[in-house]
Image (cartoon, rainbow, N blue to C red; front, side, top):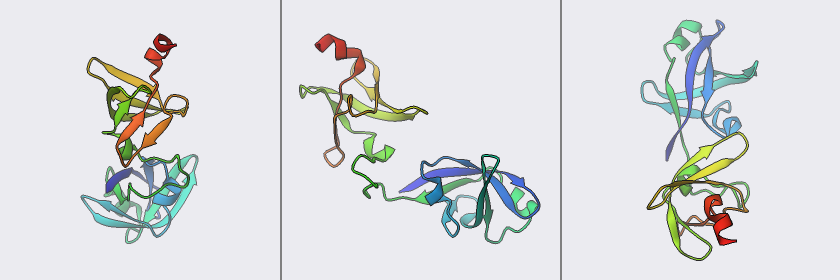
Length: 167
């Protein structure tokens, strides 16, 4: 699957580097030297160099050797081919696209709703679940999401807004 992983920002210096707005949770993998990224405007871009400067990722691309060439890449969206069905490094790694569209059930087995989004916050992720009457935000932690079966597209949740009502 083609996933958005970044956006090229302004040129940096005179040697053909550009700032990168990272939109990936695996930047060390997606932006490694030699990696190929796709863009709609410029086709395949191969990364020739990479470094972090003052907290900003800087990348160089094969064939783009000066500031003027790199400036033409500004605002280009970068995509990577990702196999979302590939297992993560541990059993609790899930890709956002594996979760969106899953049915969310309560521990009782009652259908609660459908996962429509995953909100990435600095402290934790939140599942957005659309129920017949409202949207519910459920922190994506084991205590509130005790079971996930990606292949069956089924998640068991304990929504905080009804947690006290069942106790």
